[in-house]
Image (cartoon, rainbow, N blue to C red; front, top):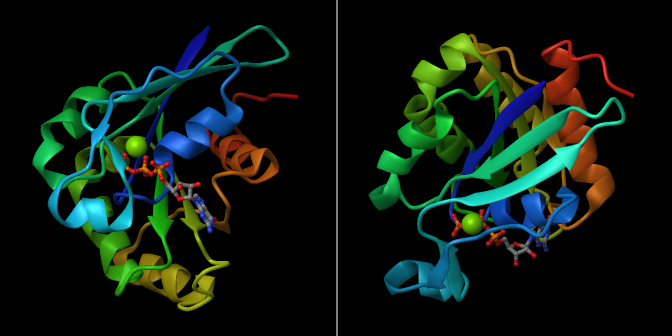
Amino acid sequence: MDYKIIFGGQVGAGKTTAIQTISDIPVATTEAKATDDVAKRKSQTTVAMDYGMLQLEGGEKVHLFGTPGQQRFSYMWDVLTIGGLGLVLLIDNHQDDPVADMVFYLDAFKDFINKNAVVIGITRMDLSPQPPLTDYIEKLKELGINAPVYEVDARRSEDVEVLLMSMLSILELGLQ
Ligand SMILES: Nc1nc2c(ncn2[C@@H]2O[C@H](COP(=O)(O)OP(=O)(O)OP(=O)(O)O)[C@@H](O)[C@H]2O)c(=O)[nH]1
Ligand SMILES: [Mg+2]
């Protein structure tokens, strides 16, 4: 069996990094030089998709698809979620109003989330410890969305594995 998981979230939240951190194969990226506002934050940005793959102990493959964070490429969000089982939503805590950003992406992916699993990883908390995870949990409760929230550093494989394992256990794929 093969499974497909999608990574979504803001520009710079760490989608490409997270996939590179855990993929068992070299990740195919579509990074281009960032322009305008994005360039202030980082030099490269995903313009179409990332693709990586993780092989589980039982031999199953988990295909990992990263979306572009920029809203102008949002048509790719719909394309990339087709056939997916779950969304890993990454939110950069080092932004002005990251809880509002989470709400924005949950809304953008709402048709997918209504039918599939979602887990949330809050990144860059080392740079901005505020807001705390409880603010996200409160907001999710308010929205009636059932999703676990974790503090993660997309550069650390242990952290990204926790997110992935949480996703796979929600999907009851019974792994490892
Ligand atoms: N300090 C810190 N840096 C992080 C953390 N997680 C990821 N990063 C860094 O943040 C940046 C994230 O960049 P990308 O992985 O390109 O972000 P992306 O989500 O793919 O962004 P787009 O493709 O532009 O939508 C990289 O430089 C990572 O090394 C974290 O928890 N703390
Ligand atoms: Mg990217």
